[in-house]
Length: 277
Image (cartoon, rainbow, N blue to C red):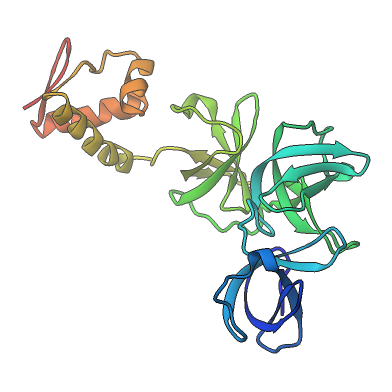
């Protein structure tokens, strides 16, 4: 079976003037790989990995190009054009990806970028994108546990922080008073499940919780000391922004980490900063 919106490993079946037709294992379905994407060394029965989408005439087409988004995934994409049918996104392929007006939270603008989800429209059987991301997220059943490291996509800013997409499945929240790095909509980064509330709402931290966060930051501080002649002009009295600018960590984490180093007698803490012993 040839799967739309995904990478498929298919084999060369027959050659035509327009390209090579590829087929699945059962040789029941075939799709054209246009000449421009056919490798010079390709022969009949050779296997090749291709992405499947529909061309401007609604025919299944194969390409060796890598799109910026796959089926049932999220990505931050730029609008190339807007017309009476909807907005059209640059997703790395020749044919642009459409966001129908019905799938826009607000009117999309050319050259602006938006976080979208790729799905197959049941009526047209075409690949389309949506900005209405809540429709594609679930909070039951949850597939994460407290303390677990997860993949995040920064989704939208709120009054209290940022909503994030967790593991391509769930919605989460990072509180703004717990953010100690610059983030933007569409950023992909790692995070940790801080708390799962009774209503299955998930609080996320960008730092590992508990002592694990302290131990993971001891090594960067030690390396920074070694690279700066055994001295850093930071201590427990330094301003949070100064600590983050140099060490990319919160003041709370920094204080705990240097406290651990001090107890191990690896540093001494002075008024002007910390010194490697």
